[in-house]
Length: 236
Image (cartoon, rainbow, N blue to C red; front, side):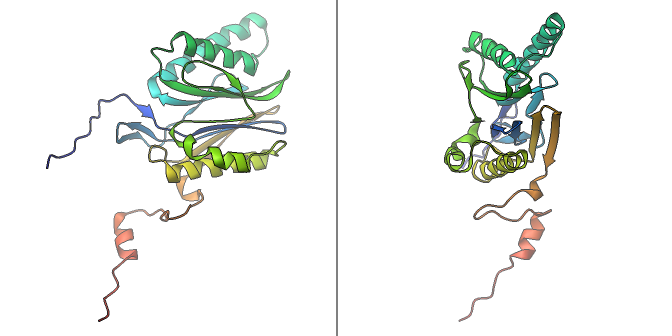
């Protein structure tokens, strides 16, 4: 039997869970932190929520390189836009710039984005930009490989008019569920809450996340598992 090999030169991919939800007063964005290269975890604590302006952020999924270059270009164009107009760009402008870059390069890019933020004209807004460069304004958006496990959960759990605390609890619970079910999602949970008062980042380490059915308690060493589950002698 041949030994399985891992090609560490494969493109970095964020097999990912990204989420954006609106609440009564703003938006909350959330993501896991696992970046993979094939079957190899290249980074277990990456930051997939990127700042575009003071009031707009983007969650990135798909190819890490593609999503980073799109975010860099959008940030640059928004900076120029702000200088020319003398006021911050709206969330809709940021989402349309990301959509334009994604659509014009749809045959070369493999990235899905969720743009979220708050502006004085429309309040908190979430826009999903899937592969191909469409743009969809949604009350909540989910993306990445872990999203397939979350559609039913969100159909049941999401509701209009949530408070900030309810929205933050919802996204952390959802990402922890995706981490439990999706092998390409993992690590910690990062969130960004954006409202009229600005943006607030929060960090949830893996040992603080909810455990789901059949999940094991986090341990520091494989020896802890062995010692905690020593075999029971057979009784004849």
